[in-house]
Amino acid sequence: MAEKCQIIPKTVFASCETYNCLKPVAWAIGRPDGPPQKLVYFCDQCVRDMVGSIPAELLPKDESVPIREVPQPLPDAKPDTEPDKIYYCKYCGEEFDTPVKIATHTRLCPARKEIENIEKEEG
Ligand SMILES: [Zn+2]
Ligand SMILES: [Zn+2]
Image (cartoon, rainbow, N blue to C red; front, side, top):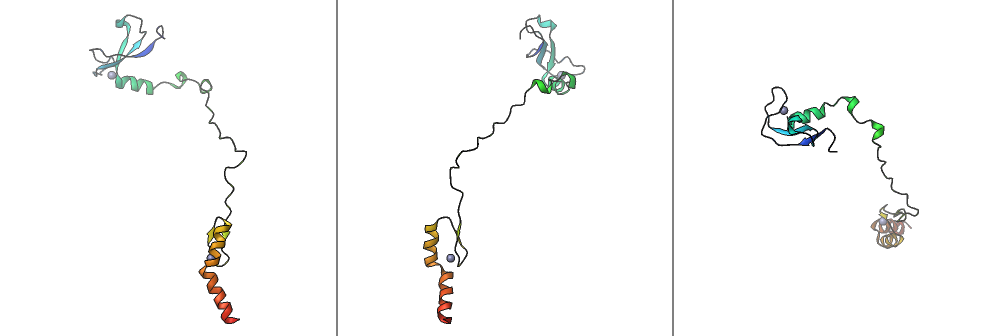
């Protein structure tokens, strides 16, 4: 990189070389192995402005920067868990995830007791 013209962080007691800009120098542009008087000095803001105004033809071409493919999560051969089965109480409609729970509930279901009491009274 040393032989290439580049933007080098540099603090010198001078002001930016941009016309009418008197801010302190934060960057030098040129070859770092060359004589310091051959570098051009700019303040932080001017370099940022410069970088922000790079013409389109100077920007790296899209194809030179391969877009990294987002790794897809591998589909699991087997799902970790069984798809949730839901058991509905046929009396009150409450949901349960295991047969044991619904059996326990059904025995105590208030809606069921109500229905059976009505049936007894009517029967
Ligand atoms: Zn400046
Ligand atoms: Zn119920």
